[in-house]
Image (cartoon, rainbow, N blue to C red; front, side):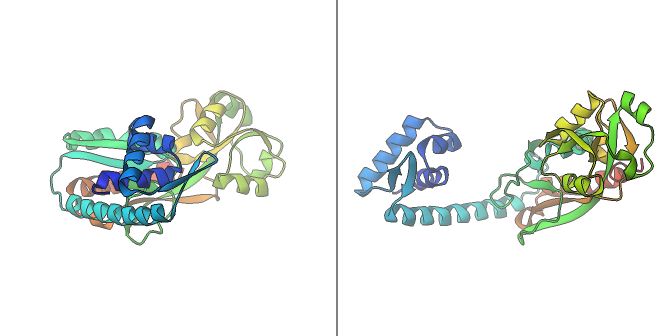
Length: 294
């Protein structure tokens, strides 16, 4: 084990618990991972993994090497953040992570103007409902629906997110403006599986009919736009979606927050600071959209 690539390979296999996942993460072929692991084990004269029912479980020696690889990775990432954090050039790649809903309803509206001001910054949007690691440099900035808990992050609340109930243009004409939640009883809804509005709807509208459910707000918005079903959505998204009209906005509950965050080592990076500050101003300009009073 003389190179970082060897340690990196062992770490990738351990995290994926097998060769196929490691090959995908390292962007090499399965045969390459197999040959390199064999070569490393031959060099050390011991096995690093036990092959158990299709899973690769580290041996005692493998565990020690994995711990060493994790320490090396941490130090490398730490050095990379510190060096990148001192970069004062308004050029290069800048990665921001956000959910699909925020990427479509917020970032897509404002980033073209940011590009006009900073044409040499290449912004990459990483649309993912899972939290990407800012410490691990998976992204440089993050839009998150609640205050980040990691102590190493610098974050700022930039918006209050209110919800509303929306329907297609045709359905909204027949339903009209809904004045109270009791009027929703017996109506058909598209619901967000596992979302914050789901539990609330079950509590306040026990007789609503969940005709269709999905795990995506984007899918839910289009389902309502193409049907006679109602849908609870963040006002920012619902107010912009093609063929949707508000029938009750804003709702008293649920109420969310929007935070922009970066790692403390990156807060002075010129690219990060430029986009961080820009998003604060963009959210302020969209205050009425976020709160459903536009």
